[in-house]
Image (cartoon, rainbow, N blue to C red; front, side, top):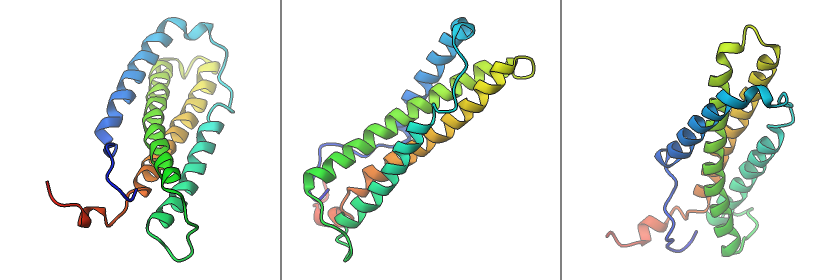
Length: 158
């Protein structure tokens, strides 16, 4: 974004809290209720991966607009700000989904050799984990794409 912002950049440490809290919660819940759930379907990671793909493309466009690249289409400041907010939210949600996938995979680990449904759910869990990790990366890139690279040079040191 071209001006100063009250929102600070998301750091990897900020993502650890939702990841750990969701992982522990999902693991605990699945210890008692896994057998009552239907098998996971392979479509589960598709929307997460699709959102990550869209955010990778948006990050490229926002970065080009913010840096005033010659071929970039101009973007309104509010659109850039919304993209930055979307990126921040997506990275946090993605971290939570990574945690959920990890909680699922840890819960399934003891049953992988003996329970066929656990094998299926573990494969889907790995796909969710990968899609969510891509969403975290895409979200962070989108958030950072909206930051004017010259801002730090223009802002007086505090």
